[in-house]
Image (cartoon, rainbow, N blue to C red):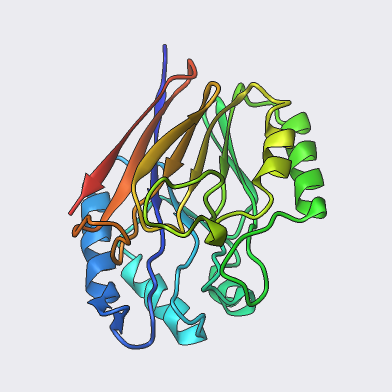
Length: 235
């Protein structure tokens, strides 16, 4: 029997101590997304960075309260707006580097740099990824990080994306089990391809940086036979 698993990705929530960030009510917007997610089958909720806008401890506690209706596993990774010590204080159990859904293993990478908007994957992180992929007993892998690894082909400033994407691709290209790479940061829903790997950018729960006026998230269905389906849900 070919089982399937539901992975929900949200990104760039930008929760602050005040309800407004970047001119929008990020608290209400995230609550609307959470309400939509609770109506879906969700095995794991993955948040790909910028959980908060200024990295304040209270902001992470506010975020935790907004996420309370989510009963499935939550996995988070850091973005450039996050403050890792405060993030770790509230979400230490959710800051995990890999998790499994059936025949799939999802591996997360920290692409953040101190006091910089753009991303960089350190040699240590690349070596760890290589080791994780080598040791993975899953049939299929997905990589998740905060920063885009290809040009967004939009008004987005690509210099704010991952600075050393070529080094990441050098590791990834050795492992045909990788079926997808997921990211946020650009506040834009897009899909690209690199050979047989689908590269997917998740919209923000706060606001988009392109002409899209809605907020949204990505819903993936991971089949045990290696098929990956997904759609962007807009609100």
